[in-house]
Length: 278
Image (tube, rainbow, N blue to C red):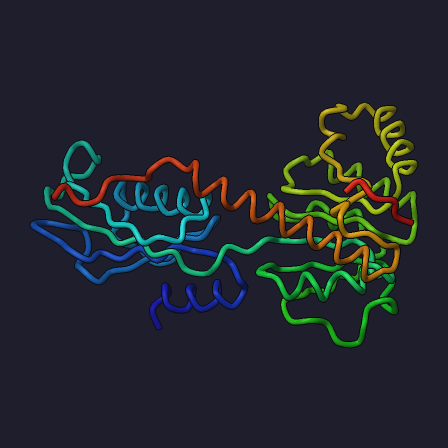
């Protein structure tokens, strides 16, 4: 089986977006024939369309598409001459096809009553959920599809493993653990959204402690606490869960729309809540 085929299947199974790059036209001397393919993910290349600067340029274009969230197919024509750093002298036309819907990566720290209400809601969205707690017994016997359970006696260690751009939710059973998780997440400061369960009073206490640790107030301001949409009121676990899920949906939709609208054109076509929580 060709490497690109198995790679495409694996990436789609994992829910990781990628771009399939195909040579659809060749003229003159070219490194590979029409029909050759490679798959580009955010971090890996699979198979080849001939190597060299052509492949580097194709990888760069594909990753721009991934970063912008573009779901549109794209054609690009390359002259394989000195300007591209290749000496073949021919012409290659590449087709770029986004594969897999862009999915939010969400990390939920805490398998308590609110976590158990929230995770099934998140699992029904176009996202991948990592659910983290030190207490195996707190997780339900059956996990929703798309949810990965992580049992770690030191949940803070899992912060280093989160993908860049993650949505982070901290709602553990222990305020000190919440603080340590908050500090670790803010130290990375590469998340898309970070919410901490709690009241305004809890936020003030955490801000003071984080300031004592030397955190930049502008970084601390990225923390959502209380989290959730203010219009969704109530203190029941499901009410809090719906409120938090609603804010995540709103953030995801806003970010995705903004990225799509502001992304620079890759190339031209062929020349022809502020609410109180426990």
